[in-house]
Image 1: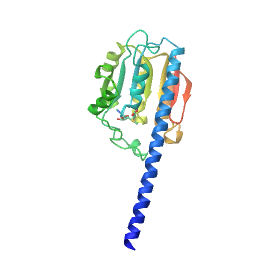
Image 2 (image 1 turned 45 degrees about the vertical axis):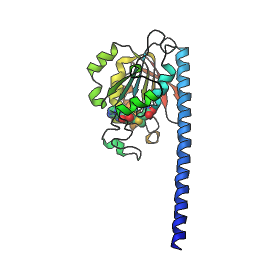
Image 3 (image 1 turned 180 degrees about the horizontal axis):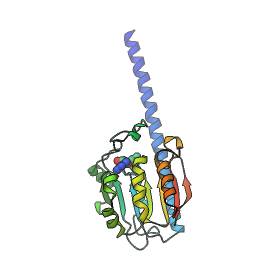
Image 4 (image 1 turned 45 degrees about the horizontal axis):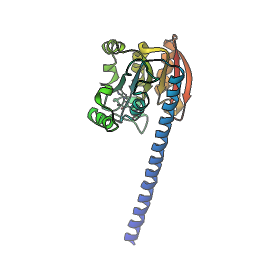
Length: 238
Ligand SMILES: C[S@@+](CC[C@H](N)C(=O)[O-])C[C@H]1O[C@@H](n2cnc3c(N)ncnc32)[C@H](O)[C@@H]1O
């Protein structure tokens, strides 16, 4: 009787985990699909509005899924940048999320969540055919790294055509928006990857940081461009 009960429990457990695995792989396929469509739409924008001739900035890079998609779409001299080689900047702690109250609000977050260390990140990119010289990593938490010295250094390399913000938290998005201010030109695209976290609320997370930034920087107009199950993209006019 006891043996029968144990094997029944084992079967139920296996079915549960199998169900979860199928769900997860479906979700990942869907996410990758959406990511590819998103970048195709962004590419179309740059074809229509060429030449914008700026660089790619990504804040929150984890295992490089979006970063690789950007390299794939905008890596060679193209409509995205016909004058120069595009610079690809990956800004991340490479230690995962910071230790702040806000990241305790969601079960999938927490200190150190989404950590991919720098060697691992390079390995992943290398496997996809991207060499170290194809991109630049800026390692560290934003409140330390996003300073005036870095701003002066990167300004010499040009403005931003596409800014991808995927760092989840209000705490992290505030310094990002203040940093990128001077890299924006008329037509720059900005993607908020975590727009609908916190139940889509305007008073939390990325949306909170965005609306505060918008109020304090009336020189920028944000034109809603693309929206999907995760992201909100704006064209910036100035
Ligand atoms: C959800 S992951 C990004 C996913 C990534 N775009 C991808 O395609 O795999 C969030 C990332 O933001 C980074 N991050 C969040 N807040 C940060 C901060 N204040 N300073 C530096 N990195 C931060 C984390 O280290 C993590 O890699």
